[in-house]
Image (tube, rainbow, N blue to C red; front, side, top):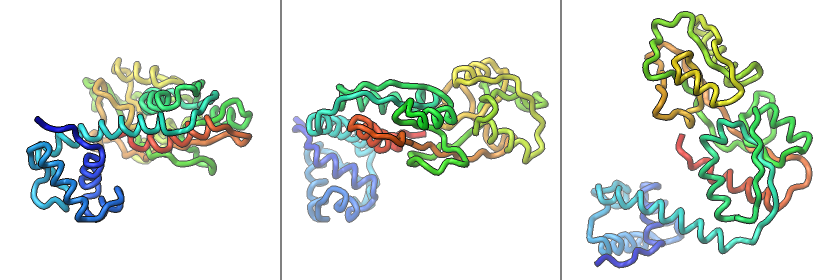
Length: 287
């Protein structure tokens, strides 16, 4: 019977894989190279399976190692969440968080759910608006934090991640047969909209705007119905729509920066902890 697995062994195992180096893994978990090697021997003996393919110091995994890696990440995440929940201070209060509905739908659910488990006494009031409206709300101190698209003239805020923009269409949309290109876009003033029109202008592709919506739901409806092509951040591309690549004849789009900005006035422990949690967790979500 396989014994209960030790969290430190799993943490070291993940570190060896992620760093592809015994030395770097040792620095990450605070152990010497011989100690790392000994831990990996113990883990393999406990499971009765080889976990590394070839030399362990390169971090390449066997099939069993790959299976264990997925489980190890889940166990470590849950362990760290429990540790944060019971090891940290009791934080209470209310935080008014502003975010565009697109990011609220595709980036924040798991982050906010995790925060709520760790800090159950913090109440989060979510306000969904476009990024330029959130900047104004911060200035008026109507919200405490804003997670938003960085504007060209914006110098404040902490960059959380870069999100590539991609062209999207319904699965049966015939791109070649649609001239001018029908577009579903956010209203004027949107950086997403401007990126799309600038990119099409650079290749002299004719276009017409057939749908305008303030929300991601409206853009999704237009795309799903086959009415138009749109641009989405990569995180919002799901299995119901088709990503159009350069082979489709459409121009490349830039990556936009997502920033987190606080109000300029006095903050609280609840605000500080939510800001730090978003910064630490959001970059880990694949896009």
